[in-house]
Image 1: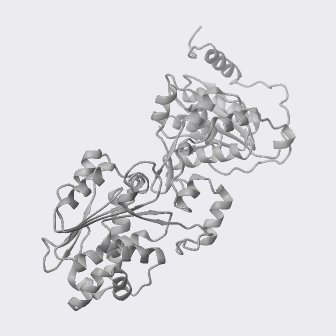
Image 2: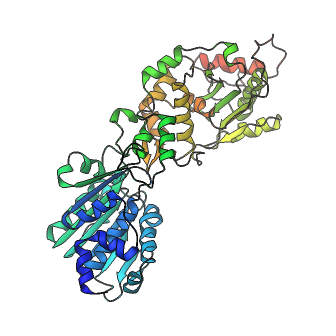
Image 3: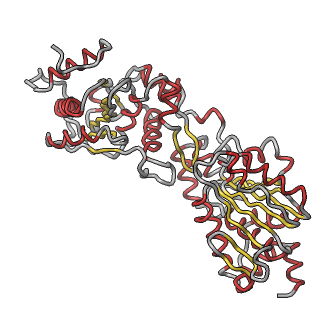
Length: 485
């Protein structure tokens, strides 16, 4: 490969991509490639699946191939994200070019020129998951060279201190670049600053999958984009981020507004309106202390009054659930098994011939492309149910828990703030909200289609006295003691 081609590709990276890799860049990729030699800072604000990682890989190979003794540091929001995406993408494109295979060696942490392995390289940089902002910034600190570049993938969730380290290296180089790309999921951090208060310093490339945008990224399915818009609405934060490539407004990081919850608490559906819907119990289990065990009965669009108990053991709790299960003829019962407290309730119920389902909040969501875990999924299902007309029982604690819970993004997926943080804000555990959300754990089919009938006078039940004692002791602010005279 002659020096004329190297010089030409240095000035025109878009030609290198066409000639070296034999591909035709999308229009937005072509614009970014052409502007690269003249811009120190390029920021790509992108929706889901547009092809930004491929562009980052092309720019890295261009800089490695056409600059003498360059140093490149590549980082992402996590080490697994870096190696599974950008670092794998670099290997993919090297394998398409005999020239790159001959001139460079790719390893799991480093790409280097075979003739100058110590001074001509691209390095994968990462930090521990529990690293603080200073430790993250130190990952890029101390790099200096005449030709230097930093590539920050998924920068939306990175600490701002990382950008300060990269900026410092530009002060002493002949040619330096910072390339960052990510989904607009955070209203802070390097990506947000580049697109807002520091926009004059950056060449900002905005890429989206908007089906009505003639400059949309063609890699994003038009049908998928239209389906998301129809299902969730144009102003839904998931759609704003993943289809339109827009930052959600700050006010939308609350799970749901107080007006919507208050309206749901004023609604009520008669028996004939919900009679054919399955009857579901959500059970949040507490051990002892200030937290409460809560049973949430839901039938269709109607959430019934919540049942709360404090300081009940697994035998007592299972008995209470079994009685409600029998009396109400529940079609499905979901019990929180996250902290292990619900294991005893599950075992006791199974000994009684019941088939409860244990739910771990930290497990994978059914819609894993949208939610980080099960907890986020069932809470958002609860919110969507409320917005569709769901009726909630009156409860100040439930209202506060739902409206003070916030969400953020991990990559392009929803995640709720930790339960411990919510408890610190409220002054109590969001047990009622957890129980309500548990009723959305899995699809349930009604065992009978007949309308709900009013209960007949109670037959003898061995758990009845226990249930009344526990309810009375809770109402009086006392802990139930089965050995009390």
